[in-house]
Length: 202
Image (tube, rainbow, N blue to C red; front, side, top):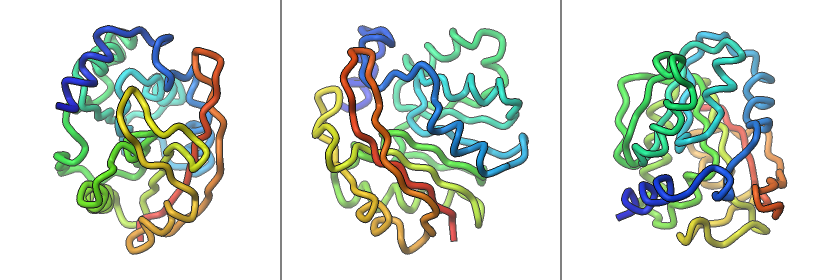
């Protein structure tokens, strides 16, 4: 099961032993702050796990933060790191394709969950979930491995995306605003090329 796979990863490896670790989430923070959303904006980090994006949001004064991940162990790492501040964050443990929310979010951030969805039905399910979970005019910021990026991650197959492919996938319900590539440096001093695109919910 995919859940067991990620539980094992986060149980057996430290942050400096996984390729996706960032010292600071500059790309996401820069994009979010450029939108000038109110500090009360409802923000969800998809696959946030042990990411420090929630830490950065709290430091910037955002007060309505949700982190979703399939791995309880990943979320526990973040809670321990945040200490007493963990209570200021809503934590959700679920597979993204099982996610149902009564909350309508203003900002949906996904760095490298979507590209694990290699089945067309799962891609369509994700599209419906993100669309239904955002307010009209809400922001969707997505990062995947680019067409020049890795073909696998953590031993699992992924799907690479170009900006054009990403825009085509979400064209029915989202308006693209900005797409760009980013070269991520891993803890092992290797690089991975990501494709990021920002969208607005129609």
